[in-house]
Every structure is written in structure tokens, then in C-alpha cells.
Length: 422
Image 1 (cartoon, rainbow, N blue to C red):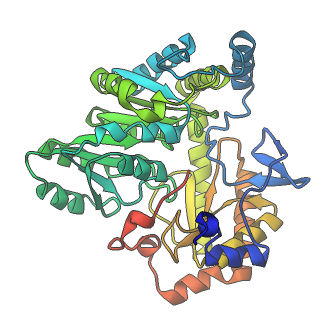
Image 2 (cartoon, rainbow, N blue to C red):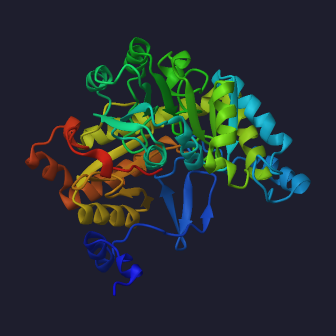
């Protein structure tokens, strides 16, 4: 007789990493400081893995808004939005988000992952869903919950997307699903190309703006504004855990669509609503995003400094000008060693292993925020250079003869196993 729990053991690759003492995950942070550093194990280290791009999570105004909301409304709502969990604060935030993004309305939910799961009712049995191969794990789960026929197009390859659209039955509904700024690679989707294909084929465009709203565009409205294609986006999701410095998420779009999701998206229907503190903090963050563009300028300047320095060291980089930067390592154990030695040098980064990336494509993901000074970035670059030299990472890439464009997933590989994480 088979024990149902016999499957509950780590894969062999992870067992090796655990046995090596190089396990890079679940390190508890004891204190988060205001200057882009954290305390881990009693040590003060540079945080180079956070998605808190605008450095708002420790901003006094967000803290004050959250504290005031707790005092007035309590620590939680103990109910779903549709029953007794809707606050006036939720409605206010929804209205402000819709106005900011240029949509008719929005639906606030408790996490960004949940916002993407809430899309699943839009993927009907008579639809064909065309999704970029690098979409986030939460979007992959949404496609599994939906009933649409799923076709994956090669990452950012609008020629491939166009060919797939040509093959769609004219009687089927067409939806294109992509991220604005991709969470692992930091590159932007080809929204102009996607918008043109959507217009030509009568397809709807759904954009996950988790990493780009608040960061990109003249007004901080994200990749759609950056590309001057906001009207081409039919439905947009976002999270408050990146640029907004708190927790939560939202889906924005036409009123008819959002009202439909309010009554059919099980991820939202059967989940407690966003707590008052996070809702109030998100409202405060939105006001800062609107009124303090210098935060965006600061983090993007830090990103340019980081990317320029990494290129000088010899790392192949994906073409982008964003604060998320992948360092290609390849071997999972070597990637964990790279992470560990960076930590020893006083830098906490992110080790991205399969299934977050394809097998054999492990990488270190770095990110900078508005809290990082030029001195911080230079310190990060120095640590990366020391570790890369010690582990011979750059020469290893050169000897394998890979170009920067090949550094991530093989475009012909089956990408269903690639599930990027936040």
C-alpha cells in the first residue's frame, strides 16, 4: 500500500543543495532599515533582492496611514468583499486606481497572486489564450483554472504570436496574456507589437503590471504608459507588494468585465478582504507615486549604474533599463554558492532555481531601490566582481560560448515547467 505522503520529499537537486549547506531560502530578516539595508543573523547587509522599488515600505507616511486605519477599523475585516468585508477604504482605493490607470473601474483583492487568479473566469471554453512563455506562476495557475485553449508564444516574439493568432478559429475568442515588466529578467514586453496584433485579430490584451506600475512611464502608470499604449490594454492586474510598499492587489478594466469578476472570480469571492492597514497604506503610496516622480528617477538611475557596472565586469545582460537584473550562472549548486558568497560579502540577493527558471539556467536576481545610493550600488558591484572572479563565473560563460540573448530559456523549449516567482 502506497503512503500518500511518500511524495513529500525534495527533488534530488534540492537535496544536494541542502546537504551542501548552501540553501539560500527562508533566511529570517530581523530588522528592515530605512537605507536599503537589513539585519540578518545579527549582521547588517545590503538588501539587493527586494521588489520595494520606490522604498515605500518603510516610509513614515505609509506607516502612519496603516496605524491610523488599524485604530479606526481594526486589524482585519473577517469577511469576503461580497458579504461583509468591503470597506469605504476599498471603494476609495478602487476609484483612485481606476482613475490613475485610465480604466473604468477596479477590484481590490488581498494579494497580487490573487489578482491574477481572479482572471480565470475570463478564459472560457470557447476562447484561445495566447500567453508569453515567461509569464509569472500566478498567471500560469490562472490559465489552469480557466477553460480556454492555451497556446504559449516564444518570449517577446511577436512574429510567433502573430502566426499563432493566424491559426485561431475565427469563431473563438482571443486573449493575449503578458507581463509589462517580466519579474525574473526585468525586460519589458513588446506592447506596441502586441497591440497591433490584437487590433488586427480582434484579440483582448491582459497585462500583468505587478513590477512596472509605479516605476515606469512619465506618470508612473507602468509599461503601458512607457510604450504610449495604455488604451490598448483591456484588463490590467497589479500588486501592492512592489512599488506600493505594502500587501494587496487589484484588477482594473471595463466596468462590465470587473463586475463580472466580482461575482465569478472564486479567488476573490471566497477570500477575506484586504485589511484596513494595507488598504490605507496603498492609498498613501498611490499619492506618493503621483506626486514624487523623483523616486522613479532615483531608482532608474541606480539601475543604469548597476547595469553598466555589471556589463563592465562581463555579465551578459538582457536589454532593459529596469532595476531587476539577472546574473546568469547556469548550474543550480554553483548559483547557491554564488548566493552564499555574496551574503558573506554583505549582500543579500535572490537565487532563482528551477522551476522559477528553466533547468540549467539558474541565476542570481539583483534589484536596486530608491533607497540605494551610488555608494550602495558600487558596494554591490564590488561584491559581485569579487565572487564572480572567485568562482570563475564569467570565464565559464565565455567558454560555453553563449550570447546574452541565449542566457535564459531556449525559445523552443517547453515552457510549461517555467514558473517565475515574485
